[in-house]
Amino acid sequence: MRVLQPHPDSPVDPATLGGGRRLAIIPAYNEAVTVAGVVESLRRHAPGWDTVVIDDGSTDDTARLAAEAGARVLHAPFNLGIGGAVQLGFVYAMENAYDFMVQVDADGQHDPREIPSLVREMEQYPQLDVVCGSRFLSDDYQYPAPVSRRTGIHLFAFLMSKIVGQRVSDPTSGFRLYNRRSIALFARDYPHDYPEVEAVLLLHHHRLRMREVPVRMFPREGGASSINSGKSAYYMVKVLLAIFVGLARRRPAVEPGDAAPVAATQSI
Amino acid sequence: MTGYFQLVSTIASFTLLLVVLELVRQRRLFERYAILWLFSALVLIALALRGDLLQLVSNALGIASPPNALFATALGFVLVLLLHFSVAVSRLSDQSKVLAQRLALLEERLRQQAARGSDSEPAAAPTVTAAAQPVGAERETVSALPRRRP
Image (cartoon, rainbow over all chains, first blue to last red; front, top):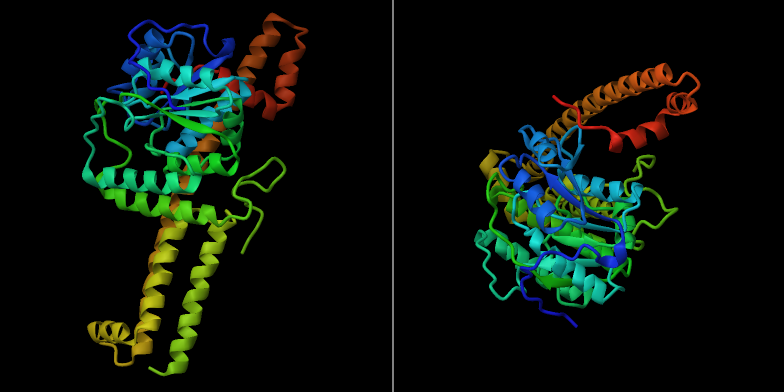
């Protein structure tokens, strides 16, 4: 069912996804070097998408440069972490009644020219709730990441494929297109620290459908990754714990009317 | 070390492990804060089960009685966890300070807007609504406001 797409060099057809309202969010934490380029690339290659940069408490010029490049900027009062920043994007998409949302990294790893690949997949299979760009399905796959990190990615890919029963080649990719159902789910409940892998698990528990498409990704252009080598071990342990404890949850997903994801009113 | 003490300490450590896992499962404890607890519980289980390991620790610490080495290890974890929570509480109090400051700025801006609105349109009802319902109005304005210039 997966369709390999040639890299689109032609300009984007703006009349996609049934004319639904479309939002591109760019979570950015101290990405002053690259954020303006990503915003401009989105304007050029994805003209039908409203662009919102979520400035996750940056201490550099990220917010100013993003605004000057023409993006709307949501300014988190302090660093929420990637999960909180992206969830702010989902909440924004809900409140402003967007039909589709795409997440693009601020560090230039994700190529906005690949957004049509995600869009085409969702148009072709409208029952999909999430389309994820995978760097490992691409023909000209080159991803020079540190070994520690690649090991983690492949371990999670193996585990998630086993758990959800379909191949998940790139569970840590944040380059994802969401529809209204997945936006509503993640506005309500999105993981905290390193959210992408757990988000795949949440989709599975909610019986939402996700499919991957091959995309090209670039090595990051500047700034520092939120996951350095020192944090890799913590990342692995935390996500593994979340996966296995998540599997043991009787009600893994917070449905409307349930207690809040973190119920502050309860004590031990 | 007596077999009875070994039994009690093993049961206690396992209980700690299970309680922490159950709290994470019920989403009442973040993984972020659970990891240190789980690590502590696993080390205590290992020391409780393996008398030779505990003997090694008590020799290394210069403690004559191995059960005391178990207490010392547990105390060490408690100290580390307390420090961990102090750091977390410091971050939380700083964050709530920043939130309160931003809220004050937002309220001031809403008041300014309301005043400006009533200057130009004396009978404008929406300004009154905005001032009377700060929660709803604030929620709309967060997304509509231009970014605050530092």
